[in-house]
Amino acid sequence: MIILGIETSCDETSASLVHGQAGKVKILSHVIASQITTHVKYGGVVPEVAARQHVIKIIPVLDSTLKQAKVKPKNIDVIAVTRGPGLITSLRVGTQTAKSLSFAWNKKIVGVNHMEGHIYANWHDHPNTKFPVLCLVVSGGHTELILMTGHGQYQLIGRTRDDAAGEAFDKVAKILQIGYPGGPMIQKLAAQGNPSKFSFPRPMLDQDNYDFSFSGLKTSVQYFIKKEFAGKKVPVNDICAGFQQAVIDVLSEKTISASKKLKVKNIMLAGGVAANSALRNHLDKRINKELPGTGYLVPPLSLCTDNAGMIAVAGYHRATQKDFTPWPKLAADPNWELI
Ligand SMILES: Nc1ncnc2c1ncn2[C@@H]1O[C@H](COP(=O)(O)OP(=O)(O)OP(=O)(O)O)[C@@H](O)[C@H]1O
Ligand SMILES: [Mg+2]
Image (cartoon, rainbow, N blue to C red; front, side, top):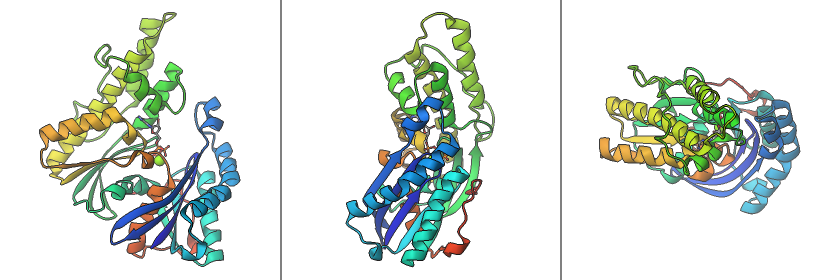
């Protein structure tokens, strides 16, 4: 089965062609047109600007995706498109494009949940993953612990009560004036800093649940800088390292304790923050030590932040269940909850 994936939920215009067979998926082509340089001057994504950029880029991106894979429209079996959650005007560009192509080429459509896409990025490298799986979903808008008992079967175990982990990285980077998006920059500077030099709070670790909170941590970084370094040179690397370690400690502790309780076979990372190498390594060490025998899966780096490859992989699994939507009924849903 050949699937064309389309993703436009935020500020990346992306398309990908994949070939799926017997549970395994191979990426044939993958194009991502990033708008970061457009939004960087605002310190975050401006929805109206993002939607206009999608309109400009979607057809050239699709054209390159088809050419790179040397696939003709007649060979495509299914179009998989992000239907939500995301920015409504951005989502509409992708869904309207998918509807038009479905009508013109007479193809079936799968409407994919963006968060399911992040999770299914893992199935690219790990097609035979055994359930139950505990997914730590850490992105710009979400921080959730999700139990998967089978394909498409989700239970919410815990979630952030305020900011998402990626949002905290972005806000702390803004406070430190080191650029947008914050995650990759903080990771880079933290690698040159001492994570024990300054100690920031580990929110909600004292509570007997699997929820998170990152808003107070961001504020404590802000007040710490104001109090200790007003008018002085800010030790950016050590602050990045201390903040990043606080986030990693909380995410890891909750993930490990939920995995012990739920007796899962695999632990999985998903979302943009899953690209963070310090988080990947820390969890790897803890799982090896505290949960020997439990599998630990991470998505390929190229499928962590928003991309259409992950949407096509999720779309393949939905298509094998015949979860199609006729094009007149396909509608973008900015608040579509996975669970
Ligand atoms: N290496 C990294 N370390 C930490 N955070 C990172 C890294 N790379 C990217 N991020 C963060 O990941 C986020 C982007 O991820 P993603 O694209 O999945 O988010 P989103 O699509 O905006 O949100 P959502 O998927 O919840 O709708 C940003 O907040 C970014 O700072
Ligand atoms: Mg995302």
